[in-house]
Amino acid sequence: MTCGHQTSYYYELLERNKVKVSDSTFINIEKLYEILDYPDVVIIDCRFDLSNPAWGFQDYLKSHLPKAIYADLDKDLSGKISEQTGRHPLPEKNNFINTCSNWGIDQSKHVIVYDTTSGSYASRLWWLLKYYGHTKVSLLDGGFNVWIQAGYPVVSGNYINLPEKFSGIPDDSLMVSTVEMETIISREGYAIIDARSQERYLGFEEPIDTIAGHIPNAINFFHQNNLDSQGKLLPINELIQKYDQLLNNQIDSEKIVYCGSGVTSCLNIAVMNHLDIKNTRLYLGSWSEWIRNFEHPIINERT
Image (tube, rainbow, N blue to C red; front, side, top):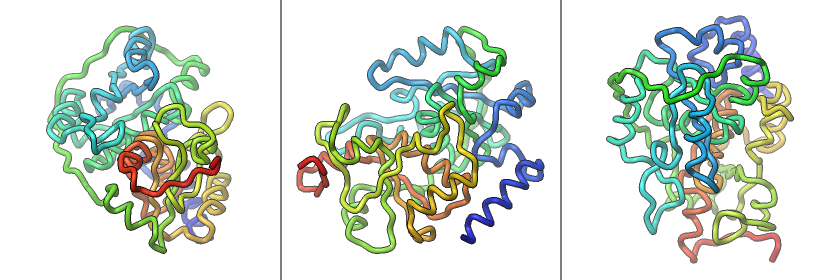
């Protein structure tokens, strides 16, 4: 597979430090520890719990990486929910720009994001920054738990950066709307990837949304399948094999990724970016927006 050869070559370059760390999708704990005190590094903690939204900040205050500031999924990384949107719509443009400025992010900063679930929430901020044109952003491989297990330092309390001027511009080509999805589901040349668990994809269970099932013609790749038992990214050759099998010779197709609300699916997008798999977009509204319209077709394997 040509893409695999290209990706392996890119990975070798990265390992030999011929590609700048700030250009890499993932950063390991050893490299982060080396650059922890660099003035151009901004670290953001994105831990969250959908069933207990207040938990993330409370737990962050107890223990987090040095220099890490906190980003709340609902308050900072999402906008207001309406009758037409999914559970986590985009934050309003000026609000997000102001938030990034208050976090101390400008074009020179290398932003490193992490959470306690190996990137399932932090990847939303990774994608948002990419969407706003900020290229220097990396996910911490393994997240907070791997950092702790390795014995690296942690601190308590609330950390705040000095404000800078964030000047990002949204790139709408990185996502698709529900209106677009209505036509994409019946068109050739698209691979629609559902990043939820297999049980939710099949419709056997639905702990969050009101309707179970998946979008027609979607294939399933659970976002946690990118990770090993410790929550670290799988070896690159194994990931290449997984995505090659998933896409079934559609490696060059348009890939649309969704989940429940456009959050955890960003981890799949980040991994495909890591593998240099092109033409990947986020269906931002995802399942929770798709089912707002009862006329939208759904597939439920239970029925």
